[in-house]
Every structure is written in C-alpha cells, then in structure tokens.
Amino acid sequence: MVWLCLSATIRCNEEFVLIVIYGASGHTGSLIAKELHKQDLPFAMAGRNLGRLEKAAQQTGTSDLRVADVDDPKSLQEIFEDADVVINCAGPFSSIGQNVISAALAADSHYLDTTGEQEFVRDCYERFESASRQARRVVVNACAFEVALGDWAAHVAAEALGNVPLDELTISYAFDSLSPTKGTQLSILDALGKQGVRWDDGRWIRVAPGSERRDVEYPHPFGPRVALSFPSPEVITLPRHVNSARIQTYISIGADSPITRAAAAIAPVLSPMLSPLLGPLLRSTIGAIAESTIRANEPSVPKAGRFALVAQATAGQDQAQCAISGEDIYALSAGIITLAAERLENEGELCGVLAPSEILSPLDALEEIASLHQLYLELP
Ligand SMILES: NC(=O)c1ccc[n+]([C@@H]2O[C@H](COP(=O)([O-])OP(=O)(O)OC[C@H]3O[C@@H](n4cnc5c(N)ncnc54)[C@H](OP(=O)(O)O)[C@@H]3O)[C@@H](O)[C@H]2O)c1
Image (cartoon, rainbow, N blue to C red; front, top):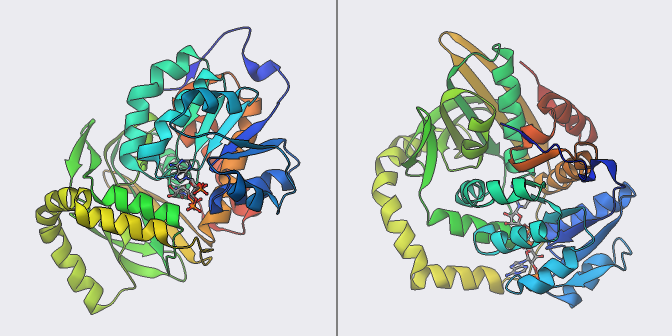
C-alpha cells in the first residue's frame, strides 16, 4: 500500500534543493556522486572521515563535504538539515543504517539506501513506517542493483498474468564472477550469521539459506543453472505490491556441471543443520577475525562482472517471466538510486517506508535503466 500525505506543506511543490550522500567515500558512494555530477543535480558528499571524502571528491570537484559520526545523532541531523534527499551507502546497514534514517527523518529529508540486507529492510518497515508517515517523508531501502531490479522485474512478471493472486513469485540471480567491495563483504558476513525468511501463505517464515534449490534458465551467456535460496530483501518488499502465496529469492552457485549439481543436491540437506551454527560462530572470535581481516584490507575497485536476473510469476498453469542481464552492478546501482532520487522530486506526495516499485513505475524504470546501462531486458 502507498500512503499519500495530503498536506498542503509537502515538498512536492517546493524547489528541489539538495541530495546528501552519506558513505560517499566508499566505492558506491563515489559512483553515485559521479552520476549526480553528470546529471547536474546538486549534492554534498558526507561520511565519517574528511580525508577519505576529500580523496573521493577529487573525481567530481565537489567542495561541499560534510563529516558526522553515525553514533552522533545531533551532528548527523545537522549535516542533513538542508537535504531534500539523503542517500545512504554506508554499510553494513544492520549496524549503521537505523541512525542514518532517524537523522534523515529528524532533518525532514527523504531517505534512500543501497542495502541488500534482508533483516535490516524488514526492521525498517517495522521501525520507520509510522515515523516516516508522520514526518511525511519517504524511506526506500535497497534502491540498488540487488532488490530494485528484482522488485521491478517481479512486479512486471506478475502484472503480465493480469494481477491475479499468484501461487509463486521467484527472483533468481547469477554472476560470472564476484569481486565485492569491502563494504559488500562486511554486509555478506553480517547476513551469513542470520537466518533469512521467505514469504509463505501471507507471512514470513524463517528458513536456512541454501535450503531450497531451483533449476533456472538464465539469459545468454549464462544458460541453465542450479540456484539455491538466499535471503534477499525482495521477500520483504514484494508482498507490499504483489499478491503471491509464496515469494523466495535464489542465487546460482556456478555454471551447470556435475559438480555444481552434486553440491546443489547436498546443500538443502546440510544448510538447515549448518545455519544455526553459523550465527554463533560468526558472532564469536572466528567472526571477529573474519571481520577484522576484511576491515584491514585496502579498498579495491571491484571488477565489472556480468550478472543475470530472472523473475518468474506462477498462477496455476500460467507462468510469466522477466529476465535481465548486464554488467557492472556498482555503476548500475548508482544509476538506479539517482533515478529514484530524481523521481522523489516529482512524486513528493508519497510517504512511508516504500518498495522500489511504489516510488517508480516498474516497467518505465526497467526500460529507462536498461537503455541507460545497455542491459538486455526480456519482458513477459
Ligand atoms: N544492493 C546492492 O546491489 C548494492 C550495491 C552496491 C552497494 N551495496 C551496499 O552498500 C554498502 C556500501 O558498499 P560500497 O561498495 O560502497 O563499500 P565500500 O567501498 O567498502 O564503502 C563503504 C562505505 O561505508 C562507510 N562506512 C563503513 N562503516 C562506517 C561507519 N561505522 N560509520 C560511517 N561510515 C561507515 C565507509 O566510510 P569510510 O571510507 O570512512 O570507511 C565507506 O564510505 C555495502 O553495504 C554494500 O553491500 C549494495
């Protein structure tokens, strides 16, 4: 459901002022700054460390740099005070995100982020739904490659079946190589220690990551692959705008081969047994060592690998599919969040915690992003 705020004082009638990027010293934040610069949109770069912000700002020539610690709500609110939209790409979000959202809403700003952390997104719906409606501002998580694309593609596939109640809606990802940034590695480590949920018969139920498998026909050059379930936030965002009995997200574990098939056959048996062990293990010394090793690594620029995504909607015997493939998920994420920030200017009457499909028309957004980023897009 989309909440409309019918106040006469809402910002949709005001001039678009400023976008503040928090976490702008990181890889994704820097790409977002470049994209905003390219589109001539006014923005400031913010984060916890001035030196790193200055380095990142060299590429855009931005002089508006702002420093605030996530544990200092007052200074965080101060750096957002003149912002129309706060874009947060400082992760992992489970430890940083909520303070940034609170400060953005306190400063009367809309909030967008790049998270791919399922539990964080679920917590946001619970914690900020009322606060954002009362503030007449929008909170949209996961406005990035992982989630916005899947949320839009699944909506388009469901619509192709005539918006009837679906039996199942799935989103399956595949990558040819993954070289995630430090921030992404920390987010993955954090997510590994948690159990995910899938949408089942009108509610979220806990399931171990990897406990379900699926054969997926990905677009060229990926082809047929086995995919295993993993907790992505589409499971949280989709029930808001698509009526489906079951929603689950999958990821391919490698090119089709006897070895990956054998691994995929074993994984659903092993993962429910391993999953309860992983959480305590990652919160223990081993988790702390892994985290400090990632933090100690020098940030590196990730390779622009290829990806594919398939959204499938099923109702009885009918099935509809939307498939996408392309490359460079970080540049794509910068394009997606910039598009979302721009639209907030025109759709300023929206408020509440919303899914990507609730702030942009899913089909228009997919077509626009596909043409801007040379994506292959197969519509149902
Ligand atoms: N869903 C998607 O498709 C998608 C796409 C891109 C990114 N992401 C997510 O976005 C996040 C950032 O990714 P990235 O590629 O930009 O990583 P990155 O290059 O490692 O940058 C991480 C950013 O977070 C900041 N940060 C980390 N801990 C902080 C803290 N305690 N307080 C304030 N700032 C802090 C860093 O600031 P310093 O420079 O001061 O360390 C840096 O600006 C990750 O969680 C990643 O998973 C998701």
